[in-house]
Image (tube, rainbow, N blue to C red; front, top):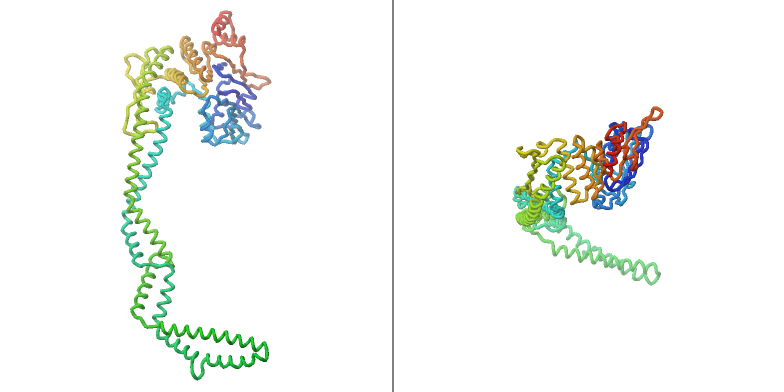
Length: 550
């Protein structure tokens, strides 16, 4: 509920601070006194776009602040979804700066207008005779029926399942598209994969093959040079090993004369061992080296295959080819398993559809059961509001389509007079009739769900005294379950309020301001008497006012 409202520097309001209570609150005032200004300021709290021209003093900022008690409203989830700090006593503030920039805060945290509008819709419902478009929308009509049918939990569960169902359908579409593309690519990918598998690729083999090819391709030159090297090391007349052995003998003899000679002798020994090892290795090379044209051809062919594959796949190494082969194998496997994925998804979708069908059937049955009671209540209320012949024909017809709130199509028809055909509300009801229908619906809803505070802006315009009295009684009953405001020109309505505020203009020193004051009992008698008989208050008007208040 709205507990307080503060408006500074807005239109004709200089500085206004007012506190509100639970129950039925009346706001009256002469035409042009500024009731629309009050509503305009409140609308800014609910997320309406700011207008720089609304600032009273263009050199100062406009500040509008409202405090709400959220104790009986289940809004924690909404605060969380909008990333707002929840507080039972929530304060919303709008500021319009002289530059034209507008800022909004919820519990001192900056918010954008879209978040403010989402929150505002759950806090106050401002309703006027000209704002009944919501009533003729299919969504609102479903909300009314589902509130009476106590369908909230079922619809929440249905919407969760519907989201999963649509996600599965989307996945199925993607898999079917993937399969269509895979069919085109499958044969080519399989060809490339077979080509790579036939190559029998081994990591790091390219360098080894290139070395083997060079060896086999130059075997005669290698053999000749190995033979010459063998001779250099072990020639009877002048071999390297022979000269080293002579050198070794000399320094063995010299070793007894000096430690330095001994060190050189040891180094000669090391050289002889190393040269001897080289000699053995050369002999091994010679033994293993042989001409093998067949092997040379095999190596050459393998190199040709690898180089062709490297060029074809635009890579530089066999390891890259092995990775490409792995990727191709995965694609081929996925392509061949798509049918299984599609079949599994179709099965999941069928199961989810079965769940949705069961939930939607439960929702439909509850709606069908609730409709007669809704029609009965609405027609009874409208009878009290001067529409004794008003009739509704409300039907829910199951369809084959999963809709956002079930599988029903709603037919919400109305006629205000006997003998007239039923038609859609927007075609069958006048503006005044729509206002009374909306009041009746809001009253019925208030008995089933916790509604936000509601402000009726001259909803009683154009109705008779007796009907206005019934409207006031309905609003008074509504206020037992929620906070209700009524801006009215009718004394019958004004007399029913628990609290009564008056909007008035005050002109001082060529400056006009709009103010709002709470009336005490005596003030209310005077205000209602003026509403009955004008500025000049007669004794009969005062007596009538007292009678209405009592």
